[in-house]
Amino acid sequence: MLKSGSKLERALKEGKFVITVEIGPPKHASADGIIKQAETLKDYVDAANITDNQSAIVRMSSIAAGVHLYNAGLEPVIQMTCRDRNRIAMQSDLLGAYSLGIKNVLCLSGDHQKFGNHPQAKGVYDIDSIQLIDMVRSMRDKKEFQCGEKILKNEPRFFIGAVANPFADPFEYRVLRLEKKINAGADFIQTQCIFDMNRFERFMQMVRQRGLHKRAYILAGVNPLKSVRAAEFMKKKVAGMIVPDEVIDRIRKAQNQKKEGIRLCIEQIKHLRQIEGIAGIHIMAIAWEEVVPEIVEKSGIR
Amino acid sequence: MIITKPKPVVEIFEFTEKFDKLMIVGCGGCASVCSAGGEKEVEKLSRELQKLYEEHNKTVVITTSVVVRQCDHKYLEEIDAQVKKADAIVSLGCGVGVQFLAERYNDKLVLPGLNTLSAGGTVQPGVWEERCGLCGKCMLHQTGGVCPVTRCAKSIQNGPCGGSQNGKCEIDPNIPCAWHLIYERLLVAGRLDLMMKYRPPKDWSKDRVRSFQNNKE
Image (cartoon, rainbow over all chains, first blue to last red; front, side, top):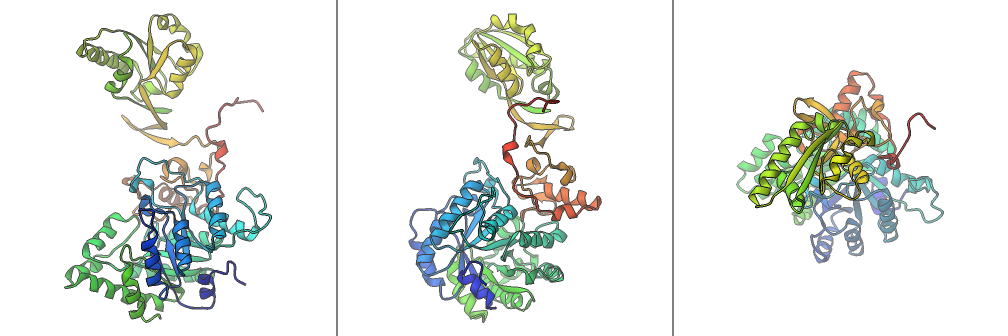
């Protein structure tokens, strides 16, 4: 039986190797750009994540942007962070999002407000990402608000996602933390961008030892590098990221860095697909979404 | 103790310059311990304000006093007479001290000379760090004696988040990740089961309880 009935859930349940992408909403009030992106991407991917003020920079809300995608025929996964809302606002937004047709939610802590364009903002962090997962599950399975009050009818039935970062520390704890998220109710997992394949293989080995790949669908995160500058930015500026030197060197030495970035990404996808326990790929082509169709086609998934 | 830090003297002058009879009240409690509101700081502020008044061709009479603690009325009685002669009071106490003075001398304006930062302790001479978030529901027994409410930038109850790398917090490479510290302590203590324990949403209604009496039900 399906928990949410979302297309993403159905595809995973049927054993399809899925592809999700990430779309960043605009820093203005028109959806024209993301609607166009949705039209380009919808035949290549199963769903698209809509980030929630990523890097703590103000953008169109993930729910509003998600509705535009939904209307354009691309199934959204709205991201929800714990940074900007307390448990009251989050549950209210979950009810609203579900009423608008959204069925997938990805729960995360969120980048600290310090990184964004309003570093003086007060971070909320009323609850953390694991508590958020548990809250969304309770609304669905127990038909209860976080406070324990019953939702008498029309409970929101989300397909619940969580993130895992195998590249953060302490490494040995990362798999246990993933397990904690699955215990709290995560149905699917999207990982941080993978560049350090050895570390990821070790992570997946531990995941399989604990049988976690059988309890949640794990989508491996990839990021096509546009330039050596982008690779260096990832390495130095993005929290909890590992980009090995050989990856940076390979992009640096390439005659055409963009093409090399795409080629590398395709190789990574082909490799990841062979790893036992990987149910799909999550492509984070930050501000370079137009390459997604080429990557999907050449990696031989569709 | 409560950690405080002096406001820049020009900022204090901005709000005192309308007055020509000032009294600076120091606090012999926490503010004195963290070198912000003791005798030395009171005298220093007095000299610096005097200088600023002169530079602005203004005259001022400044008197000073340091009480044992500003946060208890019994220690304020001794300055009642002196306060009467002043138009405004500058408190070199924490926010609590400022308010106790303002409540007692409600016909005078009491100006804060310090910024109140946190509840913390001395980690080395001259360096103070926050340790307690006054959340009203202590969980330190579950976290190896490290407080995630204050020491984790996101006050996460089930950490560490994905921004923890090499033992440091994503917001600053000089700040240790609280949950990395917790992990290491629990590992040594053989209590990693506490890392796996799910802690439900915190009851923030217990945060900074407004008033209470110890030893009474």
